[in-house]
Amino acid sequence: MFLLKRVVPVIAAALGACAISSSALAEQQPALDTARIEQLTGLKGSYAKDENVFKVSRSRTDIKVQVDGWTMPTFMGLTSWAAFTPAHGSQVMLMGDTVLLEDEVNPVMSTALDAGFEVTALHNHFFFDQPKIYFMHIGGMGDVSQLASGVRKIYEKVAEIRAAHPTPLMVFPKTIAKDSSISPAPLEAVFGMKGQTSNGMFKVVIGRQANMHGVTVGNEMGINTWAAFAGSDSEAVVDGDFAMTEEELQPVLKTMRAEGINIVAIHQHMTQEQPRIMFLHYWGKGKAADLAKSVKKALDVQSTLRK
Image 1: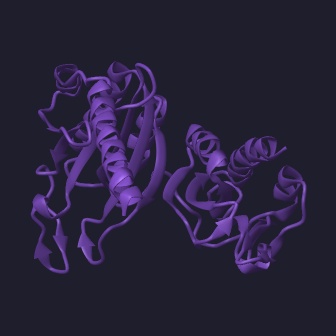
Image 2 (image 1 turned 180 degrees about the vertical axis):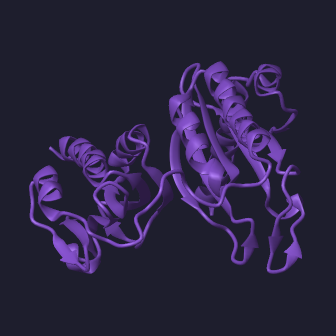
């Protein structure tokens, strides 16, 4: 009993010291220049003191969206946002989500990448939405001025697209030949491998391995990169999927966008895999050989990173 009376005050004092230390540490975090963020983004924001996060947002009041036959208020999930918090030294971390129509996605993605952001996901949140809405998640680390300016560029690009085309575009530029007659040999030469053919179409598949629950999984279990071509040699379409690690995602994404290939989804297909595998779905139109060369450039970038 005597020992207990001696130990309890010591524990209480230690816990109190930890609480004071944590409080002091929180107070020592760098302060965000919220006025600068508002100035550069052109948006008013809100500050969450408990997390030291400053967030700006822009509701998509410029579009009318119906989901399941019901007019969707922006309050229900049609608001783009970007949040800032202090990181290491003078650096700031940014995370955000951008609400986009289909014809906005790829130009805005290129704007985000050019501004130094990472694009970390692209997907839908709804079914039966008219027009279709996609959500592009972004992240970044750097100087607050660079990040805030980048956010403004993203939102300005959206406004620019809608000003030029008040009615959303329904197709990508260029045409696809009605009947498929893809010549396999030139594409096999580009990829340096034999492909599959069917009814005038052509496909290559490149597998890789991962581990799930102690089991090795690979190509036939869905861990693969593929490219499928249809149409004619001069009016072709390529669609496909890149399977890649998180470290490979941004370089592959930048390469594909630089080549004019449209990105239509970025997400995962499984859980608990090692290494973690991300999947990037794409769609491109043009000459078959040019499209193959564009995909091959991304494959080469990915291969370099895996060495």
